[in-house]
Image 1 (cartoon, helix red, strand yellow):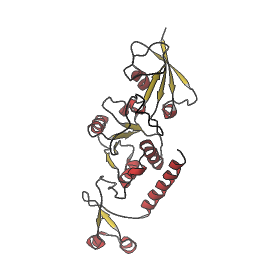
Image 2 (cartoon, helix red, strand yellow):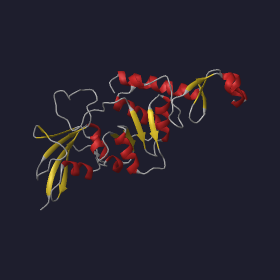
Image 3 (tube, helix red, strand yellow):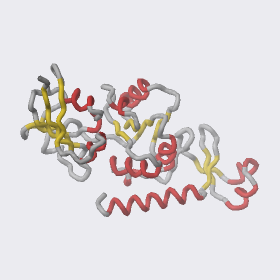
Image 4 (cartoon, rainbow, N blue to C red):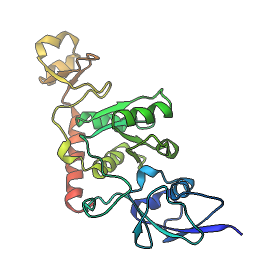
Length: 252
């Protein structure tokens, strides 16, 4: 007869199950398995789990489950800081925010760079490289690939839920509390280098006629030499940030 563990998921961890209504999930298992094995066998990356509790005791990923165990799993507490009084699976990200993203998140990467966030993006490197790079440089790994976040080497990562890029940006800003880190100094959306102000007269021969006529403030990427100016795309970003700030103040 098979063994069973009863898993209670809280908050956004329920995203990883098709049925969102079950409070307790009955999971069958065989042989010796850790709670990490159980969670990742159900498609929940270890990077998404912040706290595990069995019978009022905190356990870690190495806990060997027993038949009949009832275990509660929690995501990051976004509004509460419990680390000073409570042992947790992991600490919240402790560094100046910087990211690395997989090939499916190109538009999100552009948004993050425009807002000044150091974000690496490789659309032709494999999972092994992304996982190791994120670990070596303590970058938050953003992906829509469950398996990538389950790699043992990954220390900080987040599974992007939304399909639309502007919703993805909201997710990342809320998840990592990024509002206070947004900078006026933008990065190049193409190559991630910080942009520098450049005088119009120095690049005027490179501008299209309408750009010459209607814009006077320009920036250049010192790496790829791409030229930028404050056009309608920046207005859209600013409006999105205002929307995010409004939602944040209302408790989302």
